[in-house]
Image (cartoon, rainbow, N blue to C red):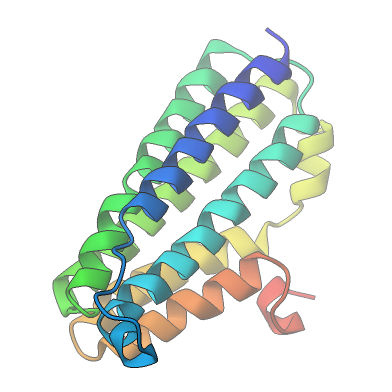
Length: 189
């Protein structure tokens, strides 16, 4: 199978995920700026999750453009990734509604960690199919960003039980680094 069918399916699922997240935003009661205060945690968490979904969408696009054809193993690995991404609206809403409490913040990190692992599995299913000399294998190199993100999510999960602000800050730092907008030390450069 060509990669365009898998990419189109994945794009559709990701679009639905973003739609579900935005539909979970509640309209504030009142017309003053003060009325926005109760919904601010939910909105901030939505913004962070939107960035994460955007990072996955962008990276997935480039991943499939470095792939010649799709195998059955790749399709299952892709579904595995989409499963974890589809849970992001749930944990986003739960974390925001509960003002970044420990358990929702840790579960948010758990879903991000599982999505990162699923993306890693998808990458390696492509490399196993197409060889260590494939375009993707060359582009990945040592994949410092992927390893950093998984370690960072694990640390943030633990931090959530001590101080959710540190965990939330780590989620933001990981997003900056993985998106390529963070400091050079995040990318291993």
